[in-house]
Image: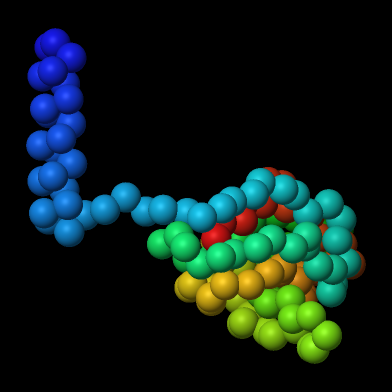
Length: 131
């Protein structure tokens, strides 16, 4: 197929998807990190969400273990509020998968490892954060 034909096919396919109400998901930002031997109450680094994307804020844990027997971790998402207490957006129980908080609005955010089953130190690698 020549270049003009490829462009025409791409335009028709894109137009058909939009007509059907299908649009690509758009993440404003993401980060890949890890949790290495964290104790309960430890906080992640902050990120800024200007709330321009269409993807829910999420934290996806992989390769989870503790220094005992791991079952689940409780993650709390917080909005960092200057000169005031931070706002708890919600707690999620995570079984070494994804936790979602919807689209909480523009602001600076972080998650806290509130609790986990088994042991005194928690590790997950990699950890994917999307907003």
